[in-house]
Image 1 (cartoon, one colour):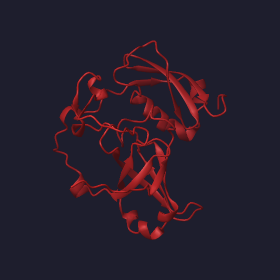
Image 2 (spheres, helix red, strand yellow):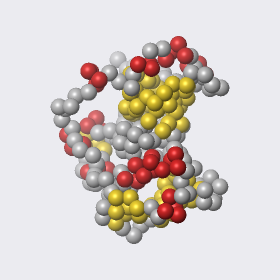
Image 3 (cartoon, helix red, strand yellow):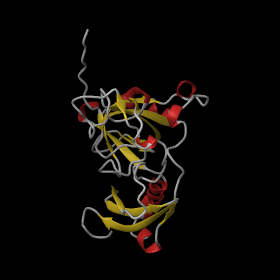
Image 4 (cartoon, one colour):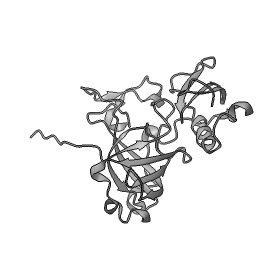
Length: 235
């Protein structure tokens, strides 16, 4: 029996990333990243959040809205394996799935109950692009959701060792002080695709209204420039 289900976003996220490039590969890797969950008008009810203040972490169920395809493949090429090895789609967290649904665990920083947009959740550690649709929110329950003994398959360890970030003082000054820790955390994860290792290539991504340009040689990431991506001028 073929079934289909109609779903609509209950909220959208605000984050520092207008595009996919640069976003940490998993949630929780950069705790300093701040974000907000803004509910759609039908769901802006403080009653719907009653009791949430007792939880430190939340599960966000969301849509890979930037990766929607008409068809799907039973196998994908995980970037962490160099893009050369095919694995079953259900053995990966690839965005290219039969149903483009993502799952992220984030830290609940606070709940803003009063405001022009109704209740807003302040979160940390999200791996979502700005405007990503959220289908549901569930509390993280440690006794049921944490399994330290679990096997991680080919993704048992982080994708790679953190790189040493070097940013000249005059460029660091262009980054607002309250954004620096998060930016350095993102850069330390080496935002490049796993299969791109050209030490001469300058990469760039948008972050908090800035264009961050960098290159990587070995275990050293050098920031080349910080440019305001909205104004076309340095902040």
